[in-house]
Amino acid sequence: MKVHEYQAKALFEQYGIPTPRRKMATTSEEAIKAAQEIGTTPVVLKAQIHAGGRGKGGGIKVIQKIAEVETAASELLGMQLVTPQTGPEGKPVGALLVEEALDVKKEVYLGIVIDRSRACPVVLASAEGGMDIEQVAAESPEKVFTEVVDPAVGFRPFQANRIVSSLGIDPSLARKASEIIVRLYQLFMEKDCSLAEINPLVVTENGMVALDAKVNFDDNALYRHPDIASLVDTSQETPLEVEASRHRLSYIKLKGNVGCMVNGAGLAMAAMDLIKQAGAEPANFLDVGGGATADMVKHGLRILLADPDVKVILIYIFGGILRCDTLATGVTEAAKELEIKLPMVIRLEGTNVEQGRKILADSGLRFSEAEGMIDAAQKLAEILKQL
Image: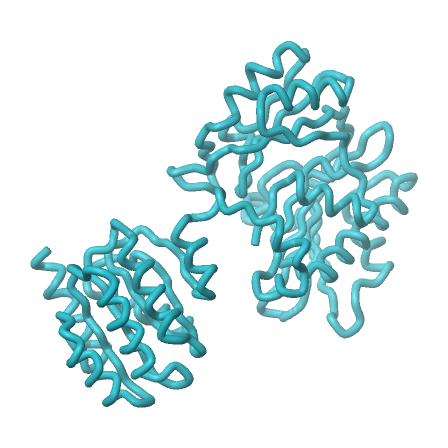
């Protein structure tokens, strides 16, 4: 789960990480009032979307006079902001962060992520703050300092000191910089984050300040953090993905024409490879999971049918915890409520497979039954040729 910059900075403040003076606004009038309350110029207007690279897309404006705030805010609010991270469709801007502009003397990068190969958190730091860290890592990997954290030991003060030393921060600020790193790690662990990033962390005449803030959270841990879950902004998400999450379905919208329903992430990935081999593109990733009920399956199929890009449906189930008869019941119940005109290829195998096949056969649904992966690919290819 992602949150906006203004929400991330509010969390930073809870953990004692310095941030600029700022106000959030959803209208031009609120933006003017926010700038007046900050009381100094210039101010910075930052479009709030769940994506980076806002400056490159025109989503950040430095305003020299209060009188110019209204025009700039009107231009930003309501726009569909396109950045290198949004894709060509962009993200809607529904809120602005109005923030004091700072006299920056030095910028550094600080971030914490999970290293899946090591199965532990890793603190990343670079003196090249304010730039895309991915670009820095690709072009000048020696400029990115990595500190691996042993989960059994935790993040130690000497590691923070080592990071500060690698960044070339003035000794007079070393203690404060170490505190910020330790507090960011504390936030990362206590809030079950998947990413906590300050880019840039800046040096000003008054000390060090988190000029930007980006925090992502582990969806599977949100039940432990209702305060974080309440921060979700569904306007930044794909509507079908939002609908799927309400029914505990793992769904990701893609750009293809074959809607697929699968149980198990590994099998879903294999199914998408299968679709590619058939000369098509997957329209989604949909894992109904091992514990899916007939009702969840029904909602999953409804979501597939709601996608106008879907021209054919592949249902590929290996019954284990999710029994084949449960899947078949969900599909037939959905068929009773929805008019399914799209061609379907269904492959069932595993627990209660015969009962599942019988339920589908007696349902009156029109579908092609596949006997295996190769057969499913061939049937998909045949259908797609006729479309």
